Length: 225
Image (cartoon, rainbow, N blue to C red; front, side, top):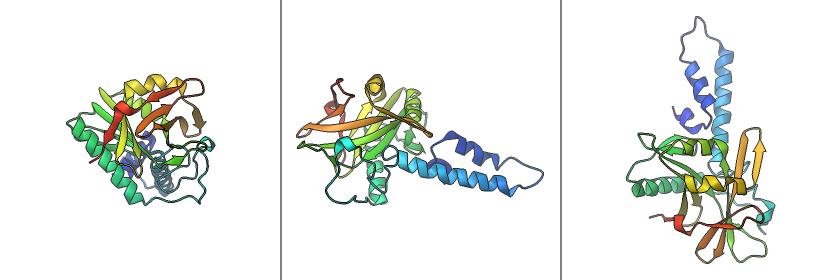
């Protein structure tokens, strides 16, 4: 159950359930295949719950070039710090929505009726070259968008490591902007780049593709108690 919850893809759950189907004999190769696939899916889910591509809970090594490189070597964040932040965000959003969000898998959460849904992803702060502000960088995956589409109330929660706030953007506000965002397609699927810039002290905006401007996030800034 824990492995299924940590894994992101539905095919992992199907493979796990296949082990419970009665068979006339035991084939260890199938069990080994399921264990390998589940472990790989769980690792991918951990990565995707924090940032796009190879940026994960354990490093910041894939910050885009447009955000600049920090002068010092990459710093690692304790996974417990990240887990605590994600839990804090989910609790805050549950209070705001008068419900309790349950973890479905990976970065996906929903209420008991599956009507209210949240995708929660995290980013560290990256210093921008030639700018006094800072940016956060997230990957918004296609399967996340499909999951949120099925809810009556759906939010993409962008957590900011080291800050006392997060951004909770309604799906119906974010989805129309996807065509104005840069994308990357890999073997694991497509994701959109969500780049959040501090336009002035305390004010943030989603940076759209070249020539498309900014989308203010001030209305979606959520304080974490």
